[in-house]
Image (cartoon, rainbow, N blue to C red):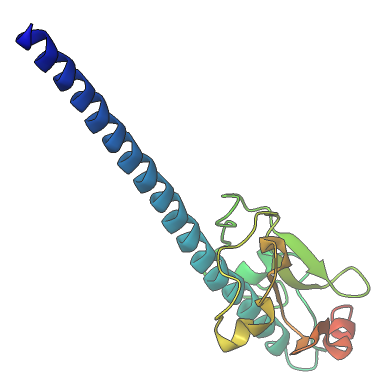
Amino acid sequence: PLRADRSGFSYVALLIVIAIICLGATASVQLGAIAHRRQAEDELLFIGLQYKRAIRSYFEAAPPGAPAAAPTRLEDLLRDPRFPGVRRHIRQLYNDPLTGKLDWVLIRSSDGKGLLGVHSRSKETPIRIDNFQDEFFHFKGKTRYSDWVFVYGVVCSDQGCEIDRSASDLGGQ
């Protein structure tokens, strides 16, 4: 009779240990997913800034005598068609780190021809909603990654952001 009691206790103890291990594994998977998403957010901020700077570089690199103009597509940032030689404004076209694809939403000038910026298609809720670097202060409180807009020629204040019409008008020239 004493052996049966001990084996029952061992079985219950084993079940408790397995339950604790499962809870620990679940918690570590959740922490890993959060860490992965934070890394994707950081990549999104880096890549978005690269596109914004490349578009600004494209505007500022107008050939002599030509008016400043926006690129018409992302590929123009890799090889500027306005110059006979290879002139790059970005090293490579980056995939959206949240979708894993080169499927950015393109922000166009008022005439629809010039490319002023990009943003992600992801409708997920960001982990970071505050404490952004100065250049991204306007992302504070945004509820979707698609609200993180990286655009050249935007004027931002505490009330919000709007496209600078003078930059928007340059897109079609």
